[in-house]
Image (tube, rainbow, N blue to C red; front, top):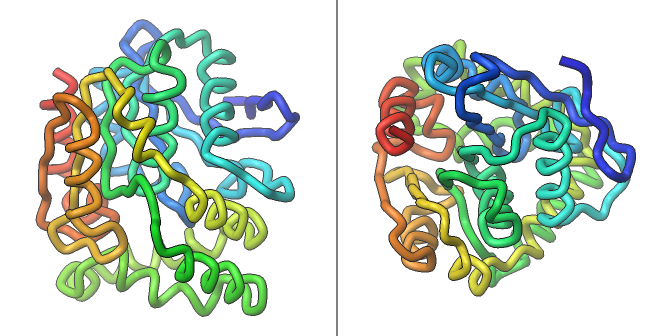
Length: 259
């Protein structure tokens, strides 16, 4: 698939699977990953949907223009992709940062969203300190020293022990992220606030939390579910990257909601 150009000229890397006649399902990745994090689900989901994966600016095969970035900017990138693919309305499944972009879309572009899945995510950080610390650390040291701490946040100890191949793959994937793009994304996460706008979301919504997620603890997802009228909440026994820790259960959970 050729890269799609956003309205500011940034090139967004996109992959599409499944029938062009099927309903759309767009997937959005976590911070520090790329579209391959959905590899375990795409085969099954593509039987039912036109699956659209993309790399957020600053990640993977997409451009990494100088910041600042914002959740609105990420949302407008998504709209540019949908427009280029002639998709009027899509289902959305976003994990972590992908769930944050999904919250922006649900409140600000409701005409483009069919159903929302917000996974392992948060709506607001009252304490900006940890994000400021991470930005400073990456600016001074790069990403390499964050790799191991990230794996501890992303996956449970049991999964890390039994799946060293997945951990090695994710370490390598994380290191492909542009450091400047990563910093700009951290700043956008630090500054987001969806507490009021989430009450405007009308799309049917599923919130997925990881029972052992230290990065976005269950209470954060539970609050999002309370903010969105009629939202459903599901807890999976996983840490942060729950779709990779429990790939089959995650795929089934999403399909059951979208059915």
